Length: 297
Length: 324
Image (cartoon, rainbow over all chains, first blue to last red):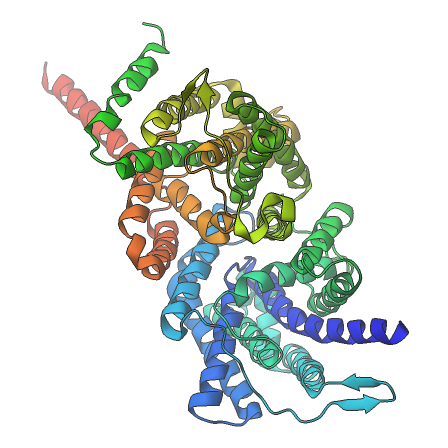
């Protein structure tokens, strides 16, 4: 019984790390640009497909695949931001009219990206066969290597993101832009570039999540829809806009989902995240780490 | 002239529409258009008038459709009772969705409703007695005595008057003080509250009204021949089509929503064979409309009239000044 619970928790934590990475991107965009990006699930899906293509067509090993997919998807994100969203974000985000337009526009973008992916890669769920090697054994427990990879890579990415944001000049500039765009302008920061960069980094994190989950799940066009709700749930549970909160929320959502599937019913697996989301929104909208919700005043 | 008369005239004129259609498929399309008009007009109330971004409207419609189906199949209610019962269920759902909306601003609301939309679909496709993923079949068509409206031709005379009535009620709401309260909330919530508008109450009313419309549309869809429902008809893709109707037609314009519903349904039907391209184009059109035509077709038409009226006014002023 205990072994079963530990198994479920391990699965939950590793899936939760993936949710956390996507939620991290959503939170980054929200704190930096004041918009909620509804097409982030599709960015994650694109990342997984780009990774799969690199892995199979170019026969690259796993780590270069991961890095290249991250970079390419980051560039794709910057392109999308520059071409489609700039007009809206320059009008101000948040609860202004442009912010609401952003929600609708992101929704349209997600359908657009989904169908472009459908045209390129087809409707089939494709396997992403990565030889990770034998599971690690701890007594009775067997920990598959793919989970080790997910947790390890996610942790490395989070540490790198934290270092970039806290220790480098670019990170400082990005945080300044997130804090106040006008003052950032006055301090001589190239605000539009930083906005693009924030968006690109967020998309890169999504791509990393996609490539990481590929080996334990199939890669398919619809994979973005489900993760969006879960990543949003993760971001809200942790406190929307808070970066450590996003990771914590992701792990929590993953564990709740895994335990729910194990003990209640696997059919409604995708609903638990939503239930958690609603409970948190009703009881404590600020999330666990308690960011103050931005209100227009 | 009584204000309802033109609408009755409209119903009378529209009654001749199925006569000029050639095939049963065209009549089916007319019915779908009418149902979509009800849906789009309803979404317009919460989104266009009150400015609340909800993407869970398909879920409410699905609940309405399945509630109506359950009432008529499992409880044996006739259509004329199942329709209001389903609408009542949806009003309750609208209230439930509206309560978090009181605390949640903009984007949060969109998140919560997105989750709702997906969850409702997943729960329906996992529940055996709702037909699960196979769909719910054998929903009886409405009947008056022995007169059964099983063909699309007959069903049209159920759907069309309801759609026209829906448009009329929507106009009535917009003209009333309730409509002005909605618009005040949309423009500026704080200013509306400061002017004495009970923001929470009117937000809830907007959600319930739009849920009533969605429930009505869902129930109409359920009882239309062949009386079959599938959970996949209530996916996010459908929500995009629905959003497109309202956004392309012009947020906040009733005729815009009607035009959008008609146009999108027809385009949707004509491009049946190019499914993926169509959805990609729909998504692209939403993105571009939001960017370049934020007020949609309705807004363009309004601008045209305003400009024309100003031009006439200017010409009149000039003529008056020229005359001694």
